[in-house]
Length: 76
Image (cartoon, rainbow, N blue to C red; front, side):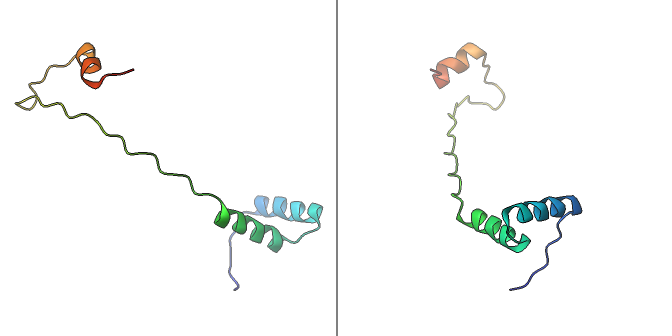
């Protein structure tokens, strides 16, 4: 399949020089890069953080300071 990709002039010059130094074509380097992206291992999503639920009765009435927070959450 034929497609058009806009590559900035400076980047294309570097790509063309790299291809020449490797004895390859620009097309070969582009296809190698596409193959790399398609086969690269996808990063695993971070586990979802579960925050503690602290019930306080009337909204805005809970008075917490750092010491109480450390007691409730149980930091290591």
